[in-house]
Image (cartoon, rainbow, N blue to C red; front, side, top):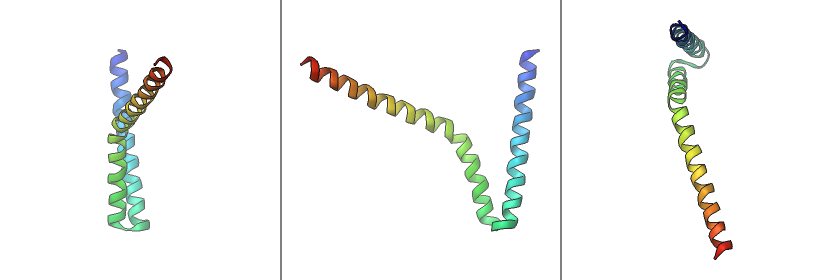
Length: 79
């Protein structure tokens, strides 16, 4: 039962997101023109789809740099 409710919630969220994207793109088309509005809509879709993966990669890169600094400082104090 809970799994079915979660699926329905995800479906509703995706539908609302699509409606908001289409509505915003249509309004932007009237305000700034067709191609800038299309670019804006595509930019939003790419940011949402690539954003989490990019955030994870950045977080891992920061953690690796911090770990390397920690190891280097430990080696300097121990050696």
